[in-house]
Length: 103
Image (cartoon, rainbow, N blue to C red; front, side, top):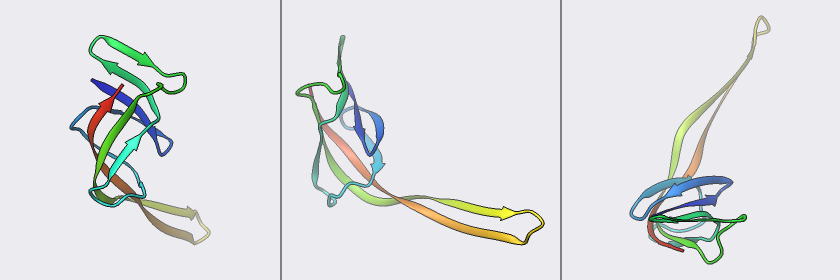
């Protein structure tokens, strides 16, 4: 059994008892979250495709951690001009343990 959900403008294929890393959700560690935007729901041989979402389907999960991702370095320069500028960025991420998929 699996589902494809949408959160944070991205799509994720999830199964029960799987941990996914998504863009930051405003939820505390240990909080229960529900994803209602289920695009595809598959259970054995049956497959339900949403138009755009599957009616009545939801995915429940538990927030495991709020953390930061890898550092992204941004470096700009112009040759022969002496222009150099460096920036860094670390995205806030949420790790979610998928507990239940309902179709």
